Image (tube, rainbow, N blue to C red; front, top):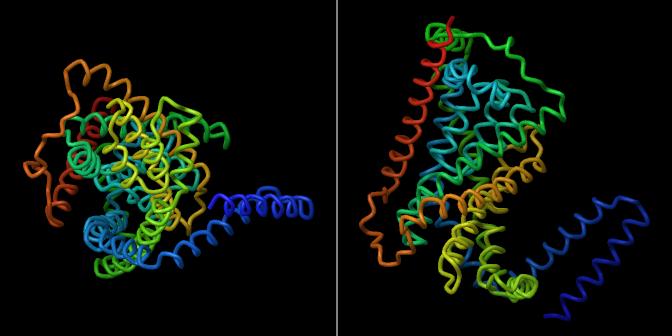
Length: 424
C-alpha cells in the first residue's frame, strides 16, 4: 500500500509539473490532477470492496429516507411559500433598522437566520438562494447572509451529540451557545471584509422608519402584485424543494460510501499517525475523528465522543469545531442549492473554517468559566430513553416549527418595540 501511495505521489508531481510548465495554469492543474486521483482511488476502493460500498450506500439511503426527507422537505416547502407570500419582506421591513447597522444587510437576513437555527443544514443556504431567485436581495448581501446563516439545528446539537454521543444533556446548551454565537461573530467579521472589498458603507439615512401599519402595507402590496395563485405557489414550491432534496440525498449516499471506504483503508490511520507524531499531546483516535469530521460531521463526532484517555474539554472543542465546519458532505449540499446563483463557494468555506475556530474557542472559554466550575462533568450513565426530545418524524417537525415560531415571534416583538421607541 505504501508503494502505491509513493507511485501516486510521483506521478502526481510529474503531471503537475507538466501542466505548470506547458500551460502555466498552476491552480487549475493542481485541482484537476487532485480530483483525478481522488476519483481513481475511490473507484479502485469500490471495485475492491463492492459489498462494503453497497452496505454504506444502503445506510445513506436509510438516512435520507428516514431522517433528511421528513425533516428538511417540509422546511424547504414552507420557506418557498413564506417568501412567495411576502412574509420575509414583512419581517425584514420591521427589523431593517436593527439588522442594517450591525451587518449592513437587508432585514430579511433575520428570517434566514431563524429558519437555519430551527432546521439546520443546508436550509439557511437554500433560503438565501430563494431570496436571490426572488430578487429580494443582491449577491453581495446574499454572500454576507450566508456567512452567518448556515448553521446546525438544535435537535442535532442537543439530541444527537449531547445526549446520544456524549451522554451528557447538560452540555447541550454549551454547544448550542458556542455554535450560534460563533456564527453571528463570523458574520460580523466577514461583514467588514465584504464592506471593504466592495466599498459598501452603512448609511443610516437610507433606512426608513416603519411601523406595523407600514409593514402590513408592504405585505399587502407584495401579494397584490404577485400574479401566482396559492395553488401555483404551492406547486412550484414542492417541485423546487423536491429537486433540492433529491440532490441532497445523492450527496448523503455518496459521502456515506466514501467515509466507509476510507475508514476501512489505512489512509486515515497513516494520516492520524503522522499528525500524532507532529502533535504528540493529541491522540491518534482524536485525529482520526477530526479527519472523518472534516468529510462528514456525524461520523467524526461519534469517533471523538467515544475516544478515551483524553480531556473532556478537548473533546468538546473538537466536536464544536466539526459541527461548525460541517464537513465536505454539507458543503457539497450547499453547493448544490446555490449552484444557480452567483454566490461564491470559496468565501463560504473560509467563513465555515472561521466559524469552526471561533466556536471551539468559545466552547473552551464557556466550559472553563461556567460548566467546569459547576461540576458539569462527563456522565456516561445517562439514560437516553428518558430524553424529552422528539423521537418521530411529526414530533421532530413540530419541535423545529415551535423553535422557528418562537424565534420569529421574538424578532417580530423586538422589531415593533424598536420602531415604537425610535418612531420620533
